[in-house]
Image (cartoon, rainbow, N blue to C red; front, side, top):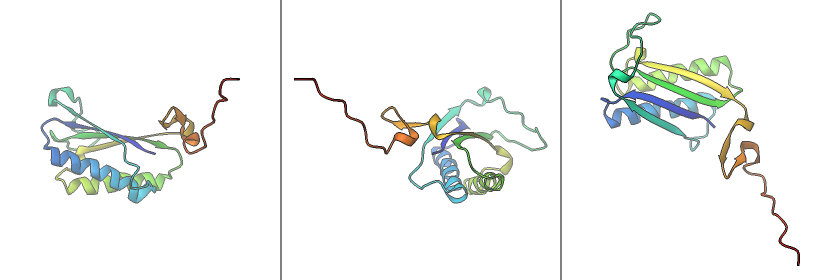
Length: 138
């Protein structure tokens, strides 16, 4: 159950932004075993002057297309899976014309109890039968 936040400069064309979002999702499916329908992404666009991104730290060459991807997902992925995810996202983003230096990715992990997929139910309780309350006496 990943949640991806994708922050991009406002000048990017919608098709290019969609391609980046697709790259993120496809990377998660291909490297981390995320089900194809498990897609939850929020895309935010920012004016260039509102994105405070160092153009060269650490030894990269970012352009005005620099974008930040934050992925929150359940703990349990290996270091190798995470490294493959980074590479896969960048490789797929290149197909949309992004430079590898323009894609910054940050991962955060949590546990199932930290998620509710809806109905006010914890992740682990989502598919459990819902308890019914007894009706009024009488």
